[in-house]
Length: 103
Image (cartoon, rainbow, N blue to C red; front, side, top):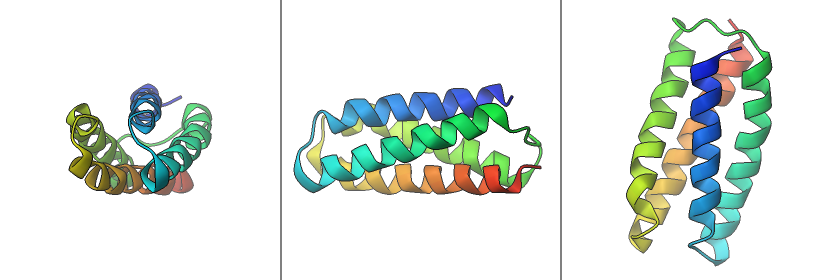
């Protein structure tokens, strides 16, 4: 199990879930979809063995860190939601790529 990767994914999923409570309409729908996608990938992150030195793994950690850091303030700033959604998508895509590599 990749503890750091799983912990980051769980932390990001929790933040995305909380963030979705502050918004309505299209932003809320996108956030809920992202949380669901993250939750599925979290299960794979727990099960798969990944090489922590692989670039895809490092990119996934970096992407999640960036999204988690930004979300810290996004719930208070409506204009920040679009950037938060982009960062979350980037983090999820990086996580998915790392899990597909399963190195």
